[in-house]
Amino acid sequence: MRSSLQLLSNRVLRPSLAFSARRLFTSRVPSAFGSRPRVASRITGLAPSLYARIQAKIAAFKGEVYPFHIGESFLLPAVEVTDSLESNVAASGIHHYGHPQGLLSLREEIALNLNRRHMPEVTAGDVIVTHGATHGLNLICQAILDPGDVMMVLSPHWPLLNSMVHTSSAVALEVPFFCQIRKSPSMSPYAILKQYLHPRTRAVYITSPNNPDGVVLSREELASIAKFCVEHDIYAIVDEAYDRFHFSTRHPAITTFEGMDSRTISVFTFSKSHRMAGLRVGYCVAPPDVRDAMIKLANISVYNVSLLTQMAALSAIRDTEASVQESLEAARDGSKILCNALSAVPGIRFDKPEGGAYVFADLTAILKGRDCFDLLDECVDMGIVFAPGLGFGQAYGNWARFCFTTMEPEKLKRGADKLVEVLKEYQAREPSVPPSDVQPST
Image 1 (cartoon, rainbow, N blue to C red):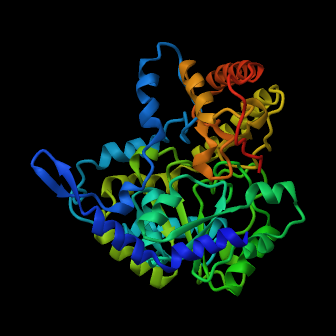
Image 2 (image 1 turned 60 degrees about the horizontal axis):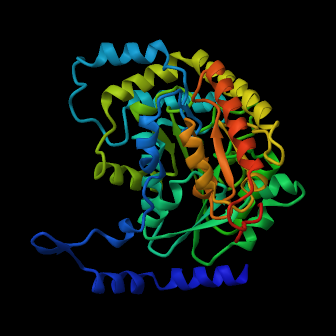
């Protein structure tokens, strides 16, 4: 632990030197006309999309494709959403600029919805509408992180978060967390976080239900995290993408704990619960100074979210509670189908998700030292796509995430049965070379 934090200290305390050295020696790149300025070094360091590499193979596959890799719903948006899009496309004013904070009518409805559910103090003024939750998280990173600051990322975690922190010239410090607290329930979240505290720690990133493993934090666990944030004066960035996907009782918002209202930034989306991923509408609730900074940043990034899709979101949050419950029930049923199927694979390890849209499985006994990407290639040849665990944290190279909401039940059953068949066959084969550098399970 000491050595990893020392390495982090070296990286954090001298960021400007590293950046200036790269610029000095790589300021230009070759071109057909001699040379030209290079792309920013913080961007060239970003990993390319994994699925861009395999997309051609999937497109050429002749049979049925089973997309376990992406977190979408097989259900269509509610009719109220599609009716709103059709009826408002020619409405007066829909083609003009909007306010960077979002439509007041939508923000008012969002505040009322949150008041009724679990955030009683929120007002329309606390809300900023964003171009999906991804845009919201990007705004947050830019608003609160200075170069060299540290964000503690509770892992396993949503893959894009690290890159957002990196492009803010800050450091994402992965904290193996969710598997630990389920493996050792007596372990205090406060104690885990304290081990990774750095002098430049600015925020901690939390998701519950968590993507990728479906862990739902209890009231006591949230209270422990809240205590840590208050005592060490750091922000809590709460990703609520799966806010409506609790398979049992929902626990209180972290903002309800003493001292947390002024240091919590919550991020929501219409993509999951309202099946509106392609329409790109989300929203954040933030303290006034952070909210104002985010509005300034929205002003110079997207200016405003499409008024047409904001009107669709207004219809969704007003009129489609029944469809939200439909999304939840579909996820709950999908979880049972996938978990029942995977349980037939000898040696596979996973906890049944407490919410969300995914099963996160330890494949160590199946891989036998082989690379998870090798297994993915074989699966793709059979029309099966999953998300390798390395994207969810450096400690999870032997893991994989499987989504259970992208396919209707009968297709999910077929896909799960085929996945089990491939996993068993792969497990039965011995590696062609002796295993090396096998990652331990976390």
